[in-house]
Length: 339
Ligand code: NAD
Ligand code: UFG
Image 1: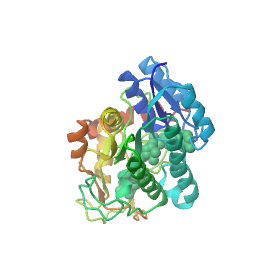
Image 2: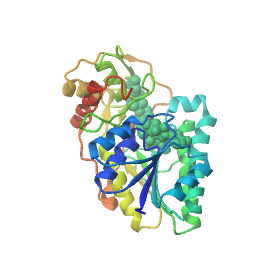
Image 3: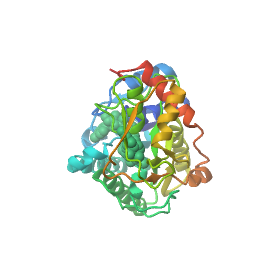
Image 4: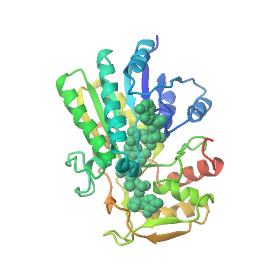
């Protein structure tokens, strides 16, 4: 039986792009996903692009029995763990759902991994674990835990659990990847982000304005202490992010313990920069209006990406032009996403 990489949440936005790069790197993949925020269509397109097949099991990772059956059925060597909820605003309204899915889900996964002697885990964390108090650029050695919402706290709690797990048994090989702001789409235009309802995040909102689904972008505040007064973030192309997972997977195949890596570009862009870059590279007009700050937002957040460069030999290569062009290609070819 060929050894497989298990990808939880592999039908989602970042998971599906990573599955594609795993297949391109000759890994054999089994995806588990409960399709709570995705559909089978993304993976069908990955199979079409790569001309390779993906094993798929529709299960919830909190169902330990169902997960165990997956570990019985396949020879799993390592796990990339994307499954979870990701909306900051929703987490404030429904904290128990977030702690349950993100924390209990990961606990359930780790229990099954331990039972089946699978010890390599790559976890999808977020720059949000650093919270509001950190100076930019943010290094991995910055304190974590000053989180400002249940989503961020659930990621922080998982990281703490994974640190303890790695300490408990040296067989564990765990990397936590702290993503900055993932954007963009596969250059084929076949694969991209398909948010439910009105997008919360800036770039999907901008692209839906450009395609005519929404009327204008609301810019949340222009009185921050930044060059143009609007919020600054470290936007990273989803294909670069996916390749960062391959680098982490390969590194952890050879290294024990727990490691945290920032996955960002190290460059910050303001909201107004993003809107004008999108207009430039899509050729579309993007009307916008300045409104009140969004509660919980910080002025700026960008990575020091040196650790991933030095240790994983990975760095983000795609610039704002590719991020915007690829977003627009996906959005204009698929105005209604996968549906
Ligand atoms: P996504 O919602 O597109 O993908 C998550 C996938 O997990 C979905 O396909 C969903 O159906 C599945 N899922 C959720 N709960 C599950 C469960 N209990 N069992 C099985 N499957 C389940 O989100 P994404 O943007 O691809 O994010 C992937 C991961 O990266 C998440 O853990 C998210 O918190 C993290 N992350 C995302 C961002 C971002 O801006 N997109 C930033 C930082 C971290
Ligand atoms: N923004 C607007 N208008 C919008 C949406 C966003 O002006 O309609 C601004 C925000 O105020 C912020 C910037 O655009 O300054 C980026 O906002 P996003 O919502 O796209 O992203 P966040 O930085 O708030 O958060 C994202 C993910 C989190 C993740 C974090 C990691 O949503 O899950 O990046 O840095 F934790």
